[in-house]
Image 1 (cartoon, one colour):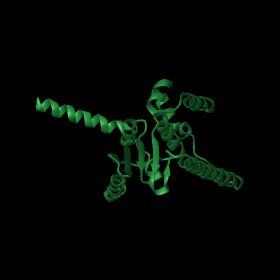
Image 2 (tube, helix red, strand yellow; image 1 turned 45 degrees about the horizontal axis):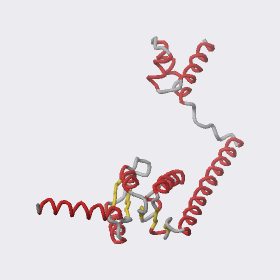
Image 3 (tube, one colour; image 1 turned 90 degrees about the vertical axis):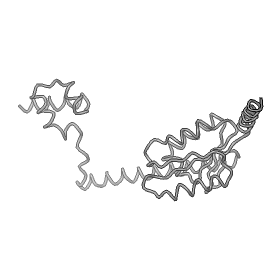
Image 4 (cartoon, one colour; image 1 turned 180 degrees about the horizontal axis):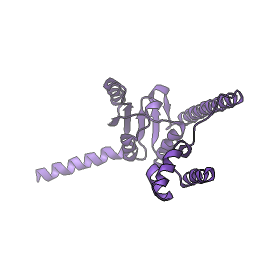
Amino acid sequence: MDRIRSLCLRTYWTETDRIAPMLVGYARTSTLEQDAGLEAQVRDLRALGCQRVYQEQVSSVAPRQQLEAAVNFAREGDTLVVTKLDRLARSVTHLGRIIEMLEGKGVALRILNLGVDTATPTGKLMLNVLGGVAQFEREMMLERQREGIAKAKGEGRYKGRKPTARARAEEIQALSEQGLSMNAIVAKLGIGKGSVHRVLAASKSAA
């Protein structure tokens, strides 16, 4: 009887604690960073009062399984907490998707070093401004890149990248001469069928 009563009490308190809003922490460092950086993030999140902290050490472009787990765990009224924005998202687009998922679940986002908390109107505004600035910087970078390419073309210095099929034209021709069909060449080299067709057609015309 005592064992059953104890189990019931533990279940009751667990459910009661989960019903209350929680601070859910997320910490990340890249595979090139020291473990101390991850430990420092976890320490700061714990000090803030995060009852649960998800952590991982992955590159900026790798899938973030623990981030996904943190978002899945969070419930309406909870807050996802990170120490810095770059620990959370790899790009403006990625950040937008995360925010959309959190808002869909009624979960707020808090970024410690920026003092942003989307549970408040001011926090939401600040995050929108930050996202807009980041998008602007990206568009400016792309514009400068386009201008640089145009200038290089004007000076005759820009040749661009060779198309994949063109770069492997000799290999395509050799496989064709070995009796491989177009579909077989496409499957073997991972090149688009249209590109392979153009290479073979050009080869026949030259012959």
